[in-house]
Structure formats: C-alpha cells, structure tokens
Amino acid sequence: MDLPIIQVGDVLVSPDIITNTFCCDLDACKGACCVEGDAGAPVTLDEIAEIEDSLDTVWSGMSAAAQAVVDRQGVAYNDTDGELVTSIVGTKDCVFTCHEGGVCLCLLEKAYRGGKSKFCKPISCALYPIRERRLSNGLTALNYHKWSVCEAARMKGAALGLRVYEFLREPLVRRFGQEWYDELAATVDELRRQGYVK
Image (cartoon, rainbow, N blue to C red):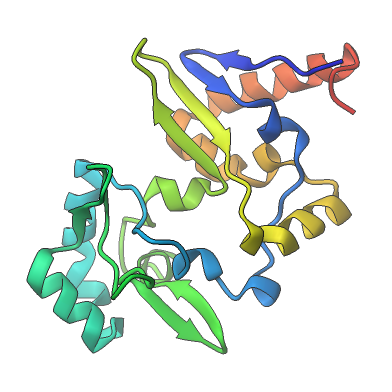
C-alpha cells in the first residue's frame, strides 16, 4: 500500500520522511552539507537577528575570508530565487563553518553547545534533510531532500533502524513543538498498525 501524505495540524509531511532511514555520519561525510551546494542555508528575519547577536561570540573562529564576506554583505543575502540564505565564501562554504580534525562543523552550534550563545543554528540546517516550504493555502509542507553526499547517513540510519523523522526529533520539536511531534509519532504508529509502514 502506498503511504498517504500525513497532515499534522497545518503541516503536510511527505511519506519519504516516515519511510526513509537517516542518521548523520560525520566521520564519513565530513560535514559536506555545510560546504557543498550553490547557496547558503535558508534563514528567517528572526534568525538573522539572532545570528547577528551571536556574531561577536563566533567572530574569532571565522576565517578571514568569511569575516570579509560578512563585513561586505552581512550574515545573509538573497539567493537567485529571492530567498534569504546565510552568506557563503566563494560559491561553497557557509561563513560559519570551521574545520576540526578534517570535519566541517558549525561555529554557531559549537558556541551554543559550549554555553556561549542562546542561538543554536538556523532551523533549516537543524532539520536537514527535511526541507520546509510554505504553501499558498497557508499550509506548511515538509519534504525529504535526497542528496548524494548523505549516502553514508542513509546507510547508518538503515543499520540503526532510524527513520528521518525519528533522527530529527529534536529539531522537529524545536520547530513545531512537543505536542505536534507526539501527534506525528502517534499517526505513524497507527499507519504501522494499518500496514502502511513496516
């Protein structure tokens, strides 16, 4: 049976988020999602304000090239689709990347986890590989973005039996709330009982 699109509140959840396995494997991918692609991470105006408030905390960890970009255009810009995204160095690295032991990490998240900042990182980064899109009817759509650089994450998720929505429980709760996530999990359990989900 084909799994139907799930609606929880005003959020439509793609079946791929329920059926696909995923668990980030930094040892394998080295944080490629922070440096690959042709634009920065989508951000909201509120997030831009929070990033700007965190700038002094992370500034010394940023590369000279990243600092120059931020000095010139700020922490975000409008990409070719007119969407606000984090600034990048050249056509690759997010300005908030840092490299430790050959792995690309996020300076914003590092400061947050070190208790130096109240802002973790843009929700679009935390939710990846889920991509959020606002629909014209007022609903929000959550889609799964399958990217070749995340093949190791799909394999690790399969080994652990961890689905996308389970791996991303924390950021989903941060974005939509615990009650919303609990309803999503209960809906998946019911679909499993009905034979839609293995």
